[in-house]
Image (cartoon, rainbow, N blue to C red; front, side):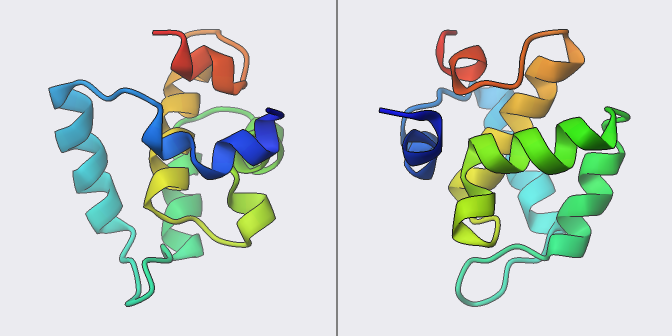
Length: 103
C-alpha cells in the first residue's frame, strides 16, 4: 500500500492516546467542520502555521501524506493524521505515515 492510498484510511490505523484524543478533538472543533465533515481550510492553515514548521513541510508533505490533497479537503481522519505528522516533524521525525504508525 502506498502512502497516498493508505492515508485515506489512516485515521483508522493510527493510535491516539487519551490525551491526544482530547487535544485533537478540541482542535478539530476549532476548525469548524461543515455539515459534510469538511474542515475550514483557513482554520486548518492557521493551526498548521502555529506549529512553526517550514511552510513547505506543512503545505506539501503533510497535506499529501495525510490524504487531504487527494481528497481536496481535510476530514476528521486526515486532520488527526496531519496533527500526528506535525507532532512527529516537531520532534525531528520525517513526515511519513511510518512516523506515526510505528508507535
